[in-house]
Image (cartoon, rainbow, N blue to C red):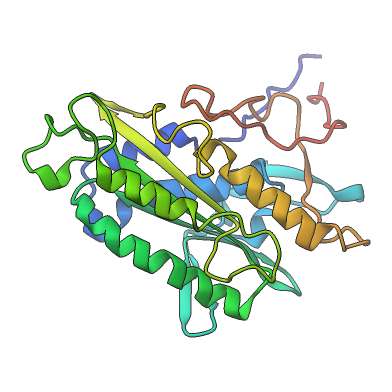
Length: 292
């Protein structure tokens, strides 16, 4: 009997999300960053092991409870929900771009994702907003694992009509405003315990993207590899601190991140290698073979 063809589970990659920043969507509408939010929620499920029903926006995925936190995962367009989660902070409600809410516990992890493609003088406003947003949430939820991820467009001073729209000089070196912003964000990352300063994030990432003809790519030369906010470590920091706060003290295992059980070949073994930030699905070692 011929083997049944396995239907791949689609993954929203970083490369696909970056293309939206180089398209025609107006930044004022916020639609240009929605694909990136979808990429983050997709990754929190497939790599992070959070059940899709815990995540907002909810990706087109469905899971079923399984033994030993090994859950079957499948594609489900009906489960997709693009809405964001509004979280009550210590001073006001805050709509968080991507949020994990544990049933019976509440908001546990979130990502605030921002982008800047021009008018880089406005980065000063981000420096003021970011710690305030973080403190607001941590006042109400000290254990909330909060990540701040900012994407900046690579724009040489020789390629733009206004100096305000340049982020790098003619030699490809970051302008002083970008370096100052990098240093400010570096001071906001690394919150490890719930008694640490509430205005600091558990993880901060800075990613520079470049728009080329018909495609987008990650600019690999900044931030430097040793930077505390290099984007390659952003998600793993979130997972590590989540495990410390929500999985380690949970003897029952209900809050633990799941291992996915899927037919062999349904998920790619490695994702976003082309973009330079490879990651792997969180797969159980006992995934089923294709039906024959």
